[in-house]
Image (cartoon, rainbow, N blue to C red; front, side, top):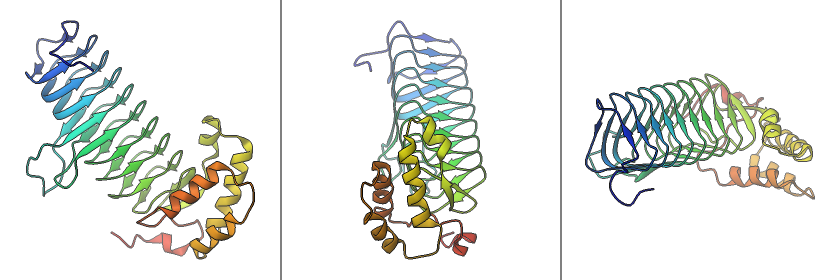
Length: 277
């Protein structure tokens, strides 16, 4: 990232507005009719194709691509927000498709963070104070409320909605049109209203997870979620097994750390309704 004024190697279309507090690295391209105004730093080779808006205290890394209508760093949709200085920090090689939005931190928060290699499809929304990992996909129309955490390589499918403070674990998948106000454990598939259906086998194989670990995760899922039971006791019984795969330990640690409670198993009739909305 640059430490000084805008690099002369940056290309800015004459119809765009770039404020005096903006720092552009070499190779940045700002297409027509963009608005870039605030304390903003944009890394090398990042491209704003056109009609892109970047505001506030915002940092973007290298090789990001922002398509028309994308808005980064605007004020949070929080009625308590009074204009306090809050920020957005985005890593490298992210893609923001048409009309996707990432908002700055809120009055009670500080910063919205997104890692590297993420793909936000059209009309997807990341709200204030979210923590987005690396290599995630947030599909068209998906809405992540404030303080949501999205683990590495997680997939939020089209038109999903995620309640504030909810965590989505690594390599988890939300099927299209689903919603959750409960945490979704890593490696799991969720649909409907925070209802777990099984292990994300296809995603795990693509990520290079071994067949042995996938088998162990399937066994763990069955032990924890396929019958209605006390989840704490089920975890204790599972941990009595020897030679647990690291991915199983990761799942268990995630569940134990949950403050909202985790999504229900497929045969739990409580999953039919959302008690928190």
